[in-house]
Length: 275
Image 1 (cartoon, rainbow, N blue to C red):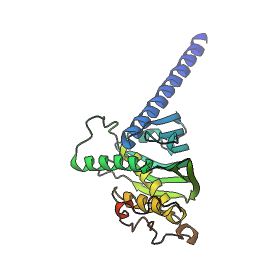
Image 2 (image 1 turned 45 degrees about the vertical axis):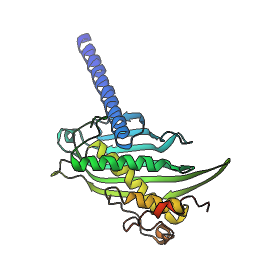
Image 3 (image 1 turned 60 degrees about the vertical axis):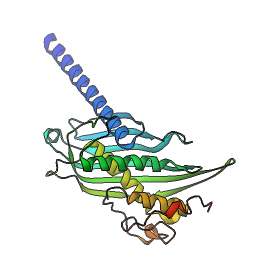
Image 4 (image 1 turned 90 degrees about the vertical axis):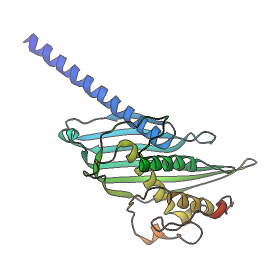
């Protein structure tokens, strides 16, 4: 009897150790893929892999601001969940039913003539160009190679903050709520699915496209520049609610609907308007 009790205790400890290390392995993979894709440090507070429940959680993901900006973070996520059964982990690509992301804060910061999101998007653009030519940046490792095919991604509770530091101690700030974002059928089996680095790019672009769709609520020059830069990145099929309130204000001020897009304002004209 004592032997059986001891065996059970050993098995429980062993399973706990496996889950602990698996959680840390996944967290490290997310951090490395995020840092590689965005060109700035990405950190994750915790990951909980539900081997039995099929429901895993990611908490406290934070993407640092590029150097030289006031705010510590470009993007923060409160929580993400993944519906994935154990046997599906054996697939290649891995089939994921649903990813839900909640509580996203993204900051568009301008200091003088520098834009934080511009540095992030330029790095994304470089990676996209490298993928097209089959060459990766020499200073980085490509990271995990296993792909994912995701049936649905839902991003809720997105808030964008525009922080404009105009010099001389002057600053302007505003916040806007972004409608729920949906992506469907991300990755395909025929192409081997999307890797974590590519998924990071897709999610970041989707959030920025949703923010740009609210262009009438942003400073005109900032909205026009953001929309123009998005046109340089691979298109992401973002699904947003179609209510009048969601779409109002998308006018000739340089914003426009992201699907149609507009050219970047020549010479960033109007980018530094203090409207």
